[in-house]
Each structure stands twice: as C-alpha cells, then as structure tokens.
Length: 333
Image 1 (tube, helix red, strand yellow):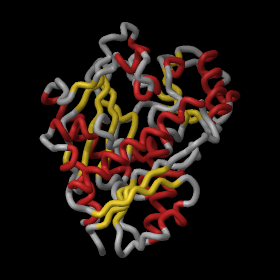
Image 2 (cartoon, rainbow, N blue to C red; image 1 turned 120 degrees about the vertical axis):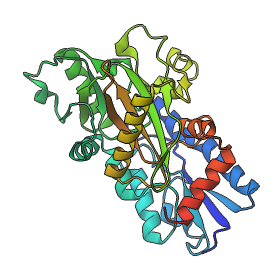
Image 3 (cartoon, rainbow, N blue to C red; image 1 turned 60 degrees about the vertical axis):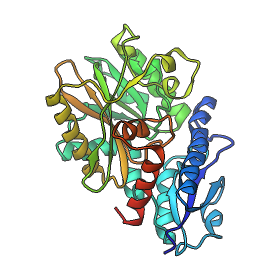
Image 4 (cartoon, helix red, strand yellow; image 1 turned 90 degrees about the horizontal axis):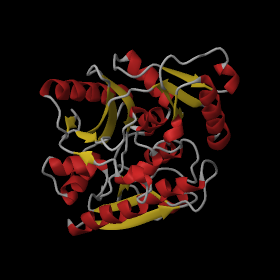
C-alpha cells in the first residue's frame, strides 16, 4: 500500500435536485475544506491529488489504483440526492480503498434521523421524544403539548432548518410538514424541542477520545424558541443568526455535566458505529438533562469549522489534526 499517496476526494454540484436554491452553499463549502486538507498533507510530504467528482465516482477514481492510494474522504453526495454520502463510502470500500471517516453503514444510519433515534433509544442514549410524519393527514388529532422542532428526516448541515422549524400548534405543524414533503421530497421528523443549551461534542480515535466541548452562545436571542443552529447560522455570513451564534470552546460547563455529556456522546458514537472522527450534538434542558439531537459521522473539517475548533483547543494545529485523521485510516481505526 502506497501510504505516501493521498487522494483528497470531494463532490462538486452545480445544481440541486431538491430543496432551496440557497442549499447549494452547504454543498460548495467542501471545496475550501479540500484545498486546506490537501495543503496540510503536501506540507507533510505526501503526494496529493485532489479529485472533485460531479458524476461517477468509479470513473473519477479509475486512474488511481487502491493499492497505491489512500482516500481522504470529504465526499458528501451529489446535487443534494439522498444517501449519496453513504454510497460514496460503500463504493470506496467495494473498490478496495482505505479511506478516512466512517463506513457507509454508519453514515447511512446517521443520515436517517429516525433510524438513528431508534438505535440511540435501544442503546439507552437519551434523545428527545419524536414522531416520523410521512403525510400531513397523520397530524389530525395530534395537539402538541410542548414546542416541537420539525426537520427533514435525512438531511444534515442544518438544511431545511430555520426559525419556522420550531412550532407550537397543529396548524404550524401541518404547514411545516407539507413544506418538507414538497420541498425536500422526504418525510419530516418532529421531535420535542429542548429549550436550553447546545453542545457540540467532537470525538476521534478507537476508544474514542473526546475533544474539548464547544457550546453555542444563544445569548443574543431573547426568545428561547429561536435558539437553534439554523441554516443561516451556518452558511449565511451576513445574517443575524450567523453573526450572533458564536461558539465557546472550551465550553464553560460544570464538571458533573461535562462528564455526563461526554459519557452520552461516547455511547452515541458506539451505537451508530462511528469510525475515525465524528461530532455529536447535544441539547441540555433547564433541568440539566442532556439529549442527543444529532450524530454526524464525518463532520466538516474546514479550518473555521467546529471539529478543528475543538482540536485546536486540545492543542493540535490544523496539519496535526489532518495527519492524525489520515493515520487512523491507514491503521484502519
């Protein structure tokens, strides 16, 4: 195996098959990440090729024999199609490549929020009560007794999540579910909204090691129902949400709560089957009870993204982080 040769693999989409036009911002975010990863690897002495595929991953990788190349996998799918990220990992495995990050099975599971919640519940991991809604008619007779957040069941990067996602009555619920069904062509996940603090927990390695906790600062939002990490907060730099959701890392958190959050994040890692590196998003209610709301198998590794923020707080440079993730793939962690 030629461990000195690395393919930095990512997808590039010109259009989307579903969703909002602005969702392309999340798709394009991977380009700068790929360049930063490639630069770090070249500086460390690796032979690096950046492969941006927009159609067929098999054809794109044909010039690079798996016995000579390891793949730094930043692939997230094509044109917003469902479960493309998992298919990329499955294809890499089938073609015989070693690659960074999680397996196709783990990615597929974590991408489907409903299936993830079933697995978390079976493993004893606390996650908010939820309901999968495939048709607005399923809502008839259901009156929410607390605020609910409604999300597309199989999207990440806060796609489909804005201030309208948190609802308080049946009319709003029907409207939001219809929007997701029509715009994102998938079922809607309605779960109890945990009004409280939000932590991002970055983990890596076989055990795994938990990096310093990060907390989203929602203090600029007086209304607790607006305290969410929306699409705008992640991808629209000129928006109020983006400018007013700073992240504190290391988070100012009490030792007992920190220990509980880390324990839950590790259990979520193993329940989903994460590998290499991952991020677990946890909300903590007013009573100090943590709930897992998201498991992200291959989180963004951009220099300004959350995973590196946590790695930097642990004392790693960007290059050191990239190299450690690559070594995990070479060691088949």
